[in-house]
Every structure is written in structure tokens, then in C-alpha cells.
Image (cartoon, rainbow over all chains, first blue to last red):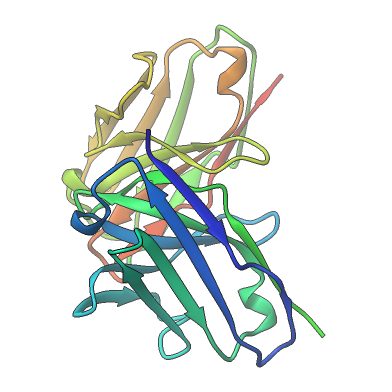
Length: 117
Length: 109
């Protein structure tokens, strides 16, 4: 059974930094594209970033230059390092396994990030 | 940039009725790259349909997808109580690389 468990969400001040983690199990992690998708309170879904390897990373324009996606295949863990956080980054951040590079086949339950002073 | 628009915003129906949800893209989307998700309150989204018309594992056959080019449809043939939720379409391959529609809420009439 695929399991994705996010952690690291917190309340942080504008301009601050935070690192999210996603522990994966139940599938060959290293062979899968992985992604972060976020959802602001009461709003829709927004793709944030996707990774296959360190040389194969993709970002939404809204986070490019501020967020970095990475992975540790030895620990089956996905990360999202977030810098220069803004109030509009407030959201529930979902970790997702990307199926065939084009859809989000499995999702975690999310980790809440609140950016507020 | 490919923008997805979903209609209606809210669909009020009774159990047993047929639901027809629309997703329109601002530019042509390959049928291989159009998907649908269901999200219930307090839950993560769940993949329903990928490649316009292929059901994901475990999805009942009352859910079906169709369309091409810029117009896509998700149909729920007979609504079950557990189908009342928000439905999002999603495309891959444009700019941004992935994008979602704003969602259609299917609620109980």
C-alpha cells in the first residue's frame, strides 16, 4: 500500500524559511517522479514543484527561486525547502507520487504552512 | 499559459441523478494529458480519471471521462451519496507544467 506522510508544517513569519518532508513507502520511490501540490484555505489546487533527480526539477513561477525540491532515495524521503515565505504561501502542502509524469496518482494528507506575523 | 475553466461552479443534484461536469482549456490539451480528481472535505484529492477517459485503480464505472482539444467532460452516471464532493480537472504540458481548474462542487439538492 502506498503511503505518503508529510511533516514540517508550522507557523512562520513573512520572510522566514521552512522545510517540509514527505516519507514514502509501498512503492519503488527512487524510480518515481514526485511532486508538491498546495491548497490555500478554502481554495483550489496549485502545483508547486516536481522532481525526478537533482538534474530534473520543475517549479511553478510563483515559487521559482524561493523553493527547492529535493529527495533522499536512501531514506525514501521527499523535501521542499521554502525560503522568503509570503502570506500567499499559506496552504496545506500535499506530497504526491506522479504517475507517468503527467498525473498525481497518490497523495499524502498534507502539512499545513501558515505564513503570518 | 493554459487556463482551465470548470462549469458549473456548483451542481446541486439528488442521489441517483446523472452529473455532467465540464472542463474547458484556453488552448488545446492532448487527450493523454487531461485528468480528473475528487476531493472530499478534510481529505486529500483522489485521482479518478487520467488520459481523458481511463479510470484509475478502484474507481467505479459510474465515473467516465470524455472530450478532446479544449473541451472535456466528467460524467457520473448515477450519483451515490459518497460522490458529493469537489471535482478538479488537471492538465499537463502547458505553462505552467501542471495546472488545475477551479473545481466544481457537487452537492446534495
